[in-house]
Image (tube, rainbow, N blue to C red; front, top):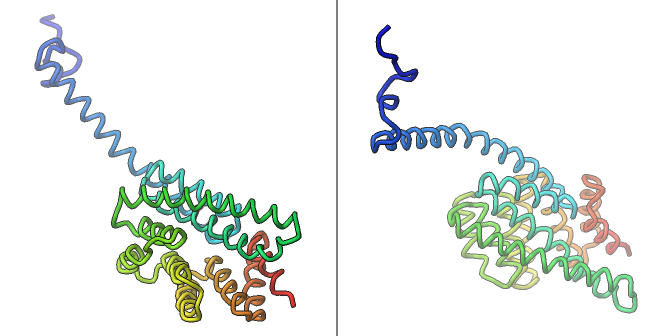
Length: 265
């Protein structure tokens, strides 16, 4: 019958695994297997990350507190699969925190002599500060990992606007890389108001918010922020009209409903 042949042919099979050549052959097989796993695994990971990010963005557009919380969680899941989404997670945290801080500021006059409103305001202040701090840390980590990514730059721009930083250095780079991006425009509006709420600053913020709404009509944050500026200007009719549109689009939007109550004569 002749000598038995090995079941596997080729140079790898002919190498004794206990020799140096056999060890090299096994190592080559291991590397090839690892490469195959990466090649076939990456597309699935990116698709899964993209699906979560898309769901997160739809939640972010709704802009109410629970939707923003959901958006941050979904972007977090996406970032574990594809780290580039960490900047989007940071932005969702910052948008949620800034909404709570804005409400707390507007409740200050009502909290005087009203313990219930005072307790609500303290909760908003505490939670808003925590979210802004967490969002700022996530934005810093994102820009350290990808200094030229638009999601990281716009998150850093908003973080700087909310923490007395220098948002211009981040937003100018984001605007060059993604002209017309609606979320960059929302961050720009916050930056314009961060230096003071003068008439000119409000005009620039309104222009940015108008551009954001034109680029993404479903982005309710732009509409709420524009109505808040109208409220600051005592233009109650415009504020009421804008806020009613937001509540009509998302009846769960607590900030819009609370601001709407402040427009009553």
